Length: 330
Image 1 (cartoon, rainbow, N blue to C red):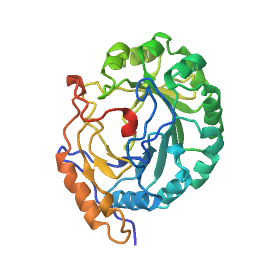
Image 2: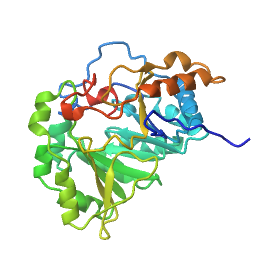
Image 3: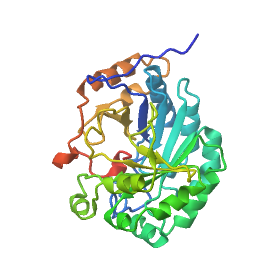
Image 4: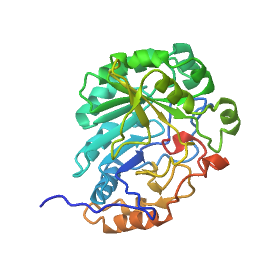
């Protein structure tokens, strides 16, 4: 029998084909904009099991989701990460299994992840300057992360992308070094505007810079805006005939940013979040135990979407109840 799906949509006519699934709240970096004092355990680490993630993914696939991205915290701190990937890759209807990582274990583990079924890879690299990278992340690991990226480029991933949070200090350093990085590498570097969260108000005020500084530079240098993919993320990517890779921007403060939202989030403990900057959430975990009947799970997900707002309220300095980005995977 052919695989059939029903579309998952909200009250604003937006359909959802993309789920960001956190598999842990733990992170081993101390990034200045997220966890400057490092992650601290405050409750038991009762995160979703591989079987639970598979049941969740299968339910989403039944309602039109074709792409799942694993996030954290840092996903690679889980020793069963390859098992989780393999479970997701076996779900009928899922065509893209993606992951965002800080690159700590990339060089050692990326081949294992690719063999398990990971198809798309994003690596967080906030600076290509070794000292600045160390200052931002708390770790002097830029050479190892870059070596892992180059290893990934030899493993036939559908895409390899880099994420860089746009900070005032890194913006002042310019973007020429990033352009040179993608000149001969088939990667997309996407700058992400620094976002206000519950715990970073002072840091945000001191370090936020508008994303237009990136697009102004790109357009002045002859880069051209490219069309978005249906199940792609929120980035606007630019290409240039002299460069193999791309450079882009994720600008959550831009007008209309939420109009084309196509993604939902599930926390590492099984709570559905309708918006990164929302509040509360809908608990799904009690329905993740049964693989043979997912109707109640699908009904709960569909019902929750009636409460999805038209957009976030970041411009009003209201980040919802999000304390820091690692809490929900950014």
